[in-house]
Image 1 (cartoon, helix red, strand yellow):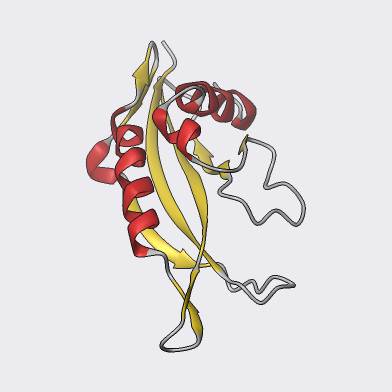
Image 2 (tube, helix red, strand yellow; image 1 turned 90 degrees about the horizontal axis):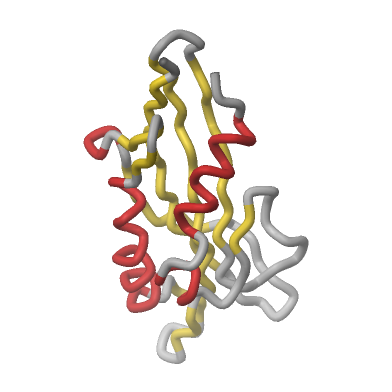
Length: 140
């Protein structure tokens, strides 16, 4: 059986050095988002890790944070759709990662954009791209 830490490390190493990591302004982390960061961080967390038999199943979140942009016409912060769109494209490889005993099940994976609900000191807000992976692990 693989631990949460082992699963996070597997995903971390699949992202490390990719175009996704190279195109964000922040850090890749499997230990949580850096404190008070307003950069484009990539954060990996295991939501569920079940099964101790031959097949183990895990749900893993890979959240990519993106600052909103100021709309001069409406005088408010809005989702930066161009930037979010680019990063969503760069995340698509996550739905088909595999290595040895690990593999994602694409039809069980999802991607959506969600506001964080956080307002920073300068007033700006942000969204995050939530990539939810369903990973099966063969424990033969």
